[in-house]
Image (spheres, rainbow, N blue to C red):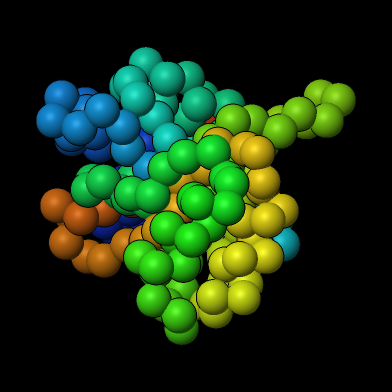
Length: 171
């Protein structure tokens, strides 16, 4: 079967994609990146980037058809080391019933594997349990970010294969 490229898909190595992110990083000190791995049982990663160099290096580690969404506005504004006071602050600022996201901002390492632990949920009980699980660790928390079609909000691109073909994966 011959592969036919999908119109409108952008590659992560396209100058326009990288330039938009570089411009955003001139205005804000960080961006949140959602990495969705194709054919990986829904596996994804949330990572903060503070430079275009770090982002470009990370993009070079990804496999073809991985979808990368960069949030162009600040996300997860509640920051700190999880303790009782931080938990209370999150419970007071994230409404019960709103989908939330908590991302540990320091990598977890296990042998050769490394990741940023994250959890999401919708209730205050889930939020409290999630934060308790990260007690003593640095986290970012807030309302779960949702990409929308407005590119001032978020932009999405895909990792091309070795030939430069861009293909949407299975997420």
